Length: 64
Image (cartoon, helix red, strand yellow):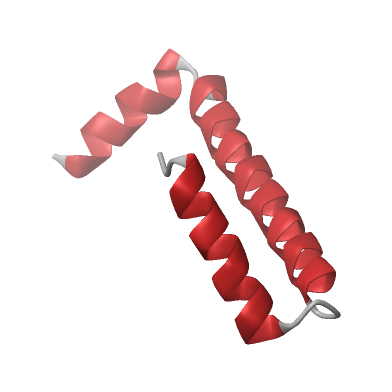
């Protein structure tokens, strides 16, 4: 996990590269992307949890 100094350096670099007018839009887009990724990951985990023992038995038999 980055420390406080690293976060400040990243923030200043982003400010220089993108400028103050685009930085909020970029942060918002990053937040939306992160939320979408988390939701997709949770969906995959929930799909795996919903599998019944019959499903796993069929998978094992089908691979043989």
